[in-house]
Length: 115
Length: 109
Image 1 (tube, chains in turn green, brown):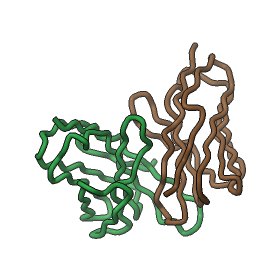
Image 2 (cartoon, chains in turn blue, purple):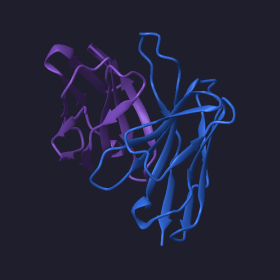
Image 3 (spheres, chains in turn purple, red):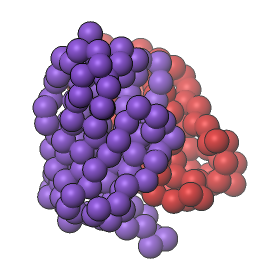
Image 4 (cartoon, one colour):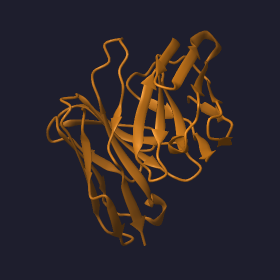
């Protein structure tokens, strides 16, 4: 069974502070993603990566950085946390899409509260 | 950008009843995935169905790509089916999913 883990599972941060969310996958997948989920919104893509040492902007990248130091690990960094970044964050992984069907596998989520 | 609309927004069922959830999307989808989100928040992929009909357990998904719609049929609902069902599509940009807000399902005993 594919596995994506996230740490921490929940965090309370102060406005202006730095927050790092970590994701680890044992699927041997090339693609990794960070999404956020807010009440009333679907999951929205923040950053993604298709190879180690490279990241790409998703649909809502402002205020976030990402780091992919290895195939297995993908971090989301909030350099200056703001109240509007309070949300649940999900990490996911998927295999390379060579035109055939693929699926994304999600981690358990991290609940971030910025005060 | 791409949009994914799901209906109904919420649904209440008596255990044993069937349900049909709808997903409509604004542009061509090369991939479509249905997810279940538990009341606790965890996300589980139910099935991947970019076109045609697929079955898994009590779930059946039918996607009509040309009409930009997909449905998820739940048969003989159980209380453990309660949660939110999310539809997500991948467009031509590749490997990026756009999600709908979901349909919240409550199955009463």
